[in-house]
Image (tube, rainbow, N blue to C red; front, side, top):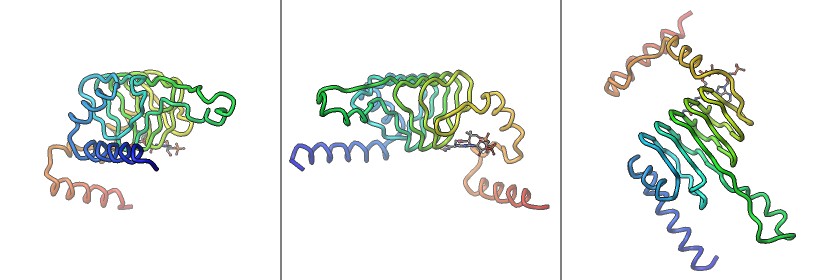
Length: 184
Ligand SMILES: CC(C)(COP(=O)(O)OP(=O)(O)OC[C@H]1O[C@@H](n2cnc3c(N)ncnc32)[C@H](O)[C@@H]1OP(=O)(O)O)[C@@H](O)C(=O)NCCC(=O)NCCS
């Protein structure tokens, strides 16, 4: 490994450390600096750094959770670099307004996720996810509308305004509720 590669790696590790430990404002700022077109009021929890970040467009009110990768580069074509070492292939990613991308998901090149969509944890998304959809799996498929998921959430007996509580209160209520759910 030459000195330039070591320096690049150190730089990347420093950015990764800052990215993880500084606040959301910094992370959004950094994604914008990297070229991502990103709207207002977004929460970014992952470090996904592609040199072609300018191919990514994200709307307003989007949450991207940990370990999500937004992939714009079709690296697999290196198999054919013996035929043409200079060729490369890329694809865009567009995520609409008011979306949630679950943990450990991969968003592949040439993907458009509509407005008001939920992508389940661990999904691999390629292609088009229509507005107002909940999509899961590999390959990600729509399983219900966001409106149906909303009704499910409101019917869940564990639902509560936990965010108004202290950690201690939250713990007490959660333990009580899960214990009650276990009773025959
Ligand atoms: C997609 C999601 C919103 C669906 O929630 P839900 O409707 O309450 O899901 P359910 O548990 O009722 O599951 C419905 C079906 O989808 C499947 N399923 C749910 N989430 C899945 C996922 N992420 N990947 C694959 N299958 C999933 C369930 O196994 C179930 O299948 P079945 O009908 O064959 O039994 C939720 O499972 C999810 O993935 N949330 C994201 C969690 C996350 O990333 N949190 C990060 C915290 S910051």
